[in-house]
Length: 65
Image (cartoon, rainbow, N blue to C red; front, side, top):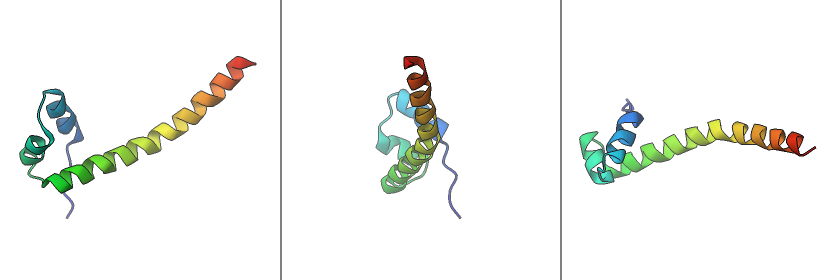
C-alpha cells in the first residue's frame, strides 16, 4: 500500500525553514521516498500548468491583434 503524502505539510515545514532531511524524518519517509514524492508532485503540477500556459499564449496572441 502506497503511503499518502501530505504535500501541504511538506510545503509548510519547508517554509518554516526545515531541511529536506528533517521533513522526510517527520513524515516517516526515507530521503529517497521524500524526493520521489516531490518529483511526483512536480509532475502533477506540470500537468495542470501546461494547459494554462497554452491558454495564456492564446490570450496574449489575441491581445496583440
